[in-house]
Figure 1 (spheres, each protein chain N blue to C red):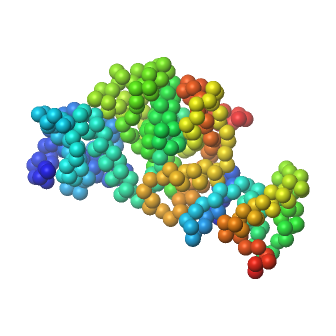
Figure 2 (figure 1 turned 60 degrees about the vertical axis):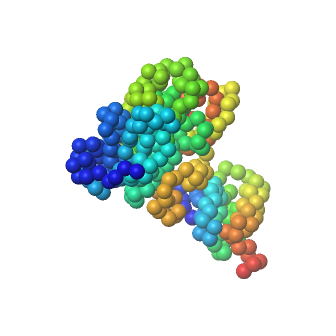
Figure 3 (figure 1 turned 30 degrees about the vertical axis):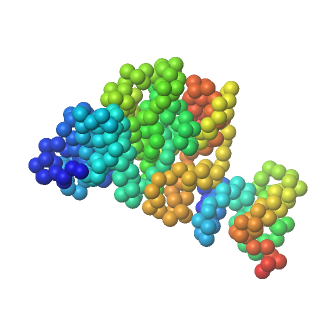
Amino acid sequence: MSAPPSATAIESDVVTFSLLGQPVAVRSKEPQVFAAYRRLYRHFPEIPPTPEAHLVEIIEHANDESGHWEALVEYLPSHRHATLGQALHRAEVRLCSHALLHSTDVIGLHTSTIAFGDELALVTGDSGSGKTTLTLSLSARGFPVDGDDIAVLDPLTGLVRGMPRCFHLDSASIEMLAEQGLDVDSKQVCEGFLTPGDVGDGHMLPRRVRAIFFLTPDNLAEPIATPIAHSEAAAKLDGQTGPRHLPSLELFAAFSTMLRDARCFELRRGPLGTTADLVIGTMKRLQEGAPL
Amino acid sequence: MQSLPDGSALLYDTDSATAYPITESAAVAWMLSDGEHSIDEITDELEAQFDANRQTIASDLSNLFEDLQIKGLLQSPSAE
């Protein structure tokens, strides 16, 4: 176990960010670690070191055959990882979780966020439903992606902001995205730690939600988007929220505020390209006020 | 009940911490299920507000009330 660093070590080996107002810090001797997190959190302020920060530390064990990289969270050791990207990811998960857990003025949503001008489309669904692949396919079509996994809802304004996470892609998804024109392989600049900034993210500012697509893991010949009522959408979103800071009735009131200009759809997945085109076409009609 | 922008609503059971989504017409029916309105009066109101024939409305209303009673969200007049 690593000993708590001295104040001097904190200043020389640590980069500290403010995530949703929560100080989080990354400690390492490896410059590429800082480069990776600066890419990931480039829309969040870097702040002076503070002992209040939630700390992760990335350590290289060059001669350890069980794994070269370790990600310590608050000085607690963990198992070794084969690649730096895996260690960076483990630490990133903890940083994001910490920020969400302690940010009591926002609601965490399990959803991707894609910018269409000043409005957002959210694509949500259970893990494995294809959110990330569809989201990156939309990115390949020129729509900035703020995040593919977590967003935060301000219950007072109803505005939503994406949270950057590193993307997880299996080889099949990478192949499908390559067919869509997104060359992910060449953009995995830090051993698989692919961030929204690497594929052209948006400004990450809170935005109004125009549509929510609840993705189901179908594999139809053609995708289908079926409108659903706000009540059904709110009930589904209830199962896709992160740490709860609000009683349920206040949570539903926050959903109501978020949904005031939004339409909701069950999106049954078809081929990747036509599914992405369906999302784009639906958003375009909504933004133009055209009938669906 | 939490009303939503498209007129639909969530009924929230605080005992079981469960939210039940209901349609816009069901939300109107719920609001009128206050012990002051008869089923006929509720049917009249739904017929006036929504594009459906009376027979369909009456059937849907019967199913809705039965469902809400099973969930413990609505008490039948006979149980009062």
